[in-house]
Image (cartoon, rainbow, N blue to C red; front, side, top):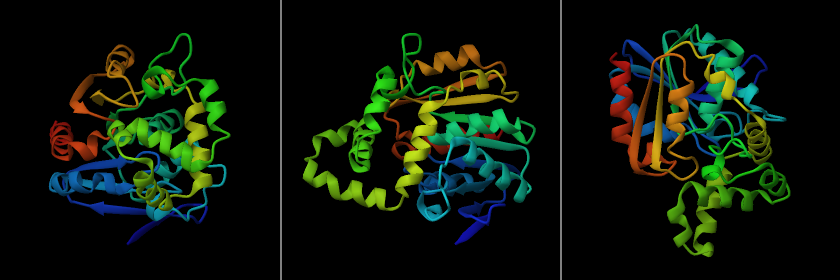
Amino acid sequence: MSYFTLSDGEKLYYEDRGNGSDTLVMMHGWTSSHDIYSKPVEILKEQARCIIYDHRGHGGSKEADGKNASMENLAGDLNEIIKGLSLDNITLLGWSMGAGVVFNYVRLYGCDALKQIVLCDMTPKQLNDDEWKLGLYQGKYTREDMERDAGKDFFSLYKDFALGTIPRLKKIPGFLLKKPLKEKLSACDEPTLRSLAASMKSQDNRTVIGQITVPVTYFYADPGSLFSPTLADWYREHVVTSFKAVRFSESTHMLISEYPEKFAKEVGKLLSK
């Protein structure tokens, strides 16, 4: 097992695999881990040096101090990894919360180390309101919902998220679903995840999209589960560099684990450019 030691002494679990001419950094989502990329990396490692790691409070980085963790903290961690491993000409890929880390990295550190950006099924603004309907839960999640969720126990909060992410889980009786969800949560640090969820929901990164100076590709699920497929149109209108959208039909937010071969193939096409 490999750990990257941050400037504050905390350690993040990471894997550095492959020796291709390109560098690919892939970041996972909330309550997930680097494992989401295991199958794609097996395909992509001949084409690129693949860096995958666990954010604070997740998986192998569960014990890293996540007190008052924020999206800015995670962007800082990414910046330290990029500098510490001497990475450049990077294809930076973020899925779900990982895309949120991309937004914050661009805002805080720019795009000088990057070749291109790949955003996977993520909105720049999670809270919906009268003028924004492309946020969480296909445009239905509001500030009032966030305030209500703040009072929920963490398992209930995670269960709602899991059912929204993977709608087919609603067909499973609650008493059968409880154990696997509990096991999933056991790999995460609850205070860190609560803090990161609040940080994500408080952000509006729409203006950051116009600050990106490298090509952008957006992978999106259709019909999707957490986010509307029409987000692809919004990105197309607001990205100021070259832009491409890749549709994953008949998929949910879990498009990477549902279609790992297609995911790897589409990433491989971008690396070969």
